[in-house]
Image 1: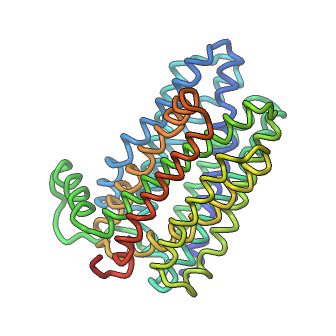
Image 2: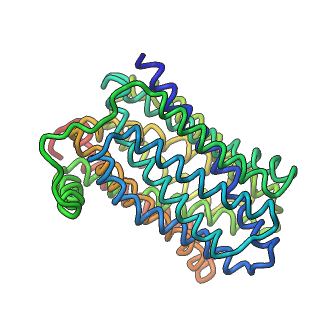
Length: 395
């Protein structure tokens, strides 16, 4: 029964990711085709992302209050209605920017609610000894979706502009059905009646701040997300400046995605055989020469291989950190812990492309890559000094 419930949970996430990837990349093209300028099209994507970041901590509080399975189902249904309305508008030829903006924000907020509820479920689905394998499979799923989703969306878009949107809406309906079929009790363990919303939100923040290991995870994750975002954007800009076409730039992202998939699949095997401290420190230092190599790369395939190397390294560290984060967090705080860590990492990553673009324009791509290498070295020093927290010891 545990395997069945985990399989349903895993499959729901895969369907959700495929549907979202199939539609989100082509929604800007739909708006451009309707005559809206590129600036407003970008505003829709940015506003929706900010909406998700704002909704995530709020959703974490309620995911630690309410039964998580009904919350997952309700969030998927809300997202299905939002994207279904956009599908209908596109199919009927009545695309209105305000409607698309509201629907995108609602869909992202619903996605944040689903993710918050899902982040608190792993303890109820698998025993502690299987955390690394279970989390590694979740990461492999997400990496595979990132590789396959855009291609699927492209095929659907060729059929008709509205087909990816219909697929996304239907995928949310299937996610609701799969979530409803999970038979495990996913309700959070509560020791007392719910306090006020603000007190519960503050409790989650205080818990992460008071736990030395979780503070380490916040710093390491935020730093890695920011630097990886900057490197990816640097690689795209540098390749474009050298005359690379869309297909070549797509190769960079594909190679990086394949590296992430292989790293996620290998992570549980590696975690079983290599001490956690070695994984965290070794991976942190291995990123330094990789980032420096990007400063001297001149071929598109070289950018792809170097980014693929980074993507290959990160999943093992993520499995180590996420597994221990679940172990050190009480069940009643799991969702809030997950949303605090996620918001911290994603919030910094949002600024990375903008910062990379400004820095590349001002100082050149080589200087940005070398700067990232220096920042990776500083992060590796921090990880080396604090890595004993991974095994529950004082640094």
